[in-house]
Length: 123
Image (cartoon, rainbow, N blue to C red; front, side, top):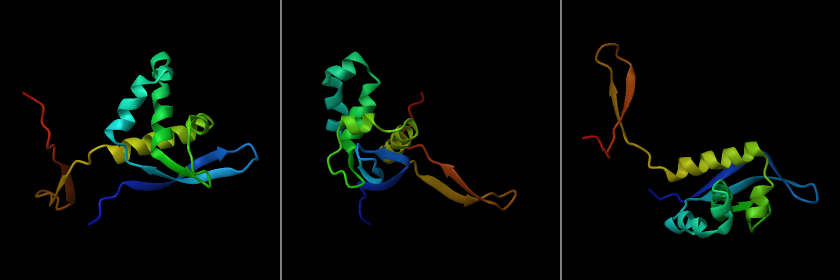
């Protein structure tokens, strides 16, 4: 089984460039530690912590339509629904998926999945 690090996506609305072309299909790669650390030093983030999302996405979205170099100006130009979509995708691909126990309910016979928490931080 190959470890997946890039994910294809289609934006709900799409980025409209200055020529009126709409770019909806793209690729997002998994983030690394550097992607999350470097924006913390950026003066735009220090001035407005919400700007971290813009910088993060500009680092992990590797292409959008035929735009090969994604920068903060492109991310800033996205419609809000597209920004929310990308942030949701970012969370999904960069969060550990919890394993589940698959079984059958002894009472009703229905198939069930019970999440298994491998990192228990309770006392």
